[in-house]
Image 1 (cartoon, rainbow, N blue to C red):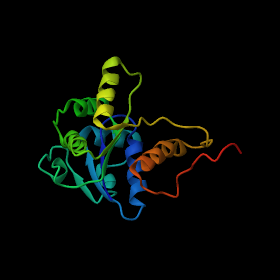
Image 2 (cartoon, one colour; image 1 turned 45 degrees about the vertical axis):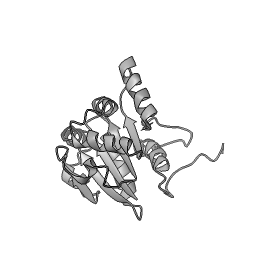
Image 3 (tube, rainbow, N blue to C red; image 1 turned 60 degrees about the horizontal axis):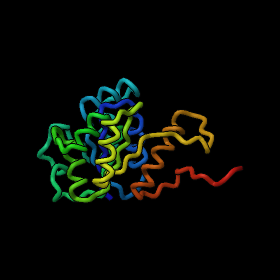
Image 4 (cartoon, rainbow, N blue to C red; image 1 turned 60 degrees about the vertical axis):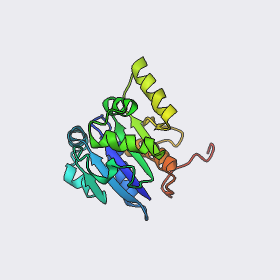
Length: 187
């Protein structure tokens, strides 16, 4: 399975990092990473991780200005793309087809080729323009999956809260992962 992961500059870089770590641990997953410059900065500010370290979690990584790379073409088959976290800027550009960088172009390709596109939109509160762009994306086939924690499994750490949202994305991707904590009913 070929999965493209985009990390934008929105707060919540841990979601993209954790998704990469989880995907890396699974057999048969080929990871293509697009890390924006703003994403690199946010990643370092929030996690202390350098972009070079994060790029090692992917099989392939591309600079955001490399619009001639394979992910910019519908002829290169990927199965799915996730933008984690997805800034409002990136979401809005994807919604309106403004392919100003590789992350947005790759997402646009996923939509036009009817491939799965999952956006972990990180913003609150949302104004009407944000909601209209989300509606447009949902109508185009994108899955809007904000990282909203569930507390029914009684998380004890920040990582367990992060993993709840990452687990949901792995399910949406159709990637089997035995680490996923599922609701089993009340104890």
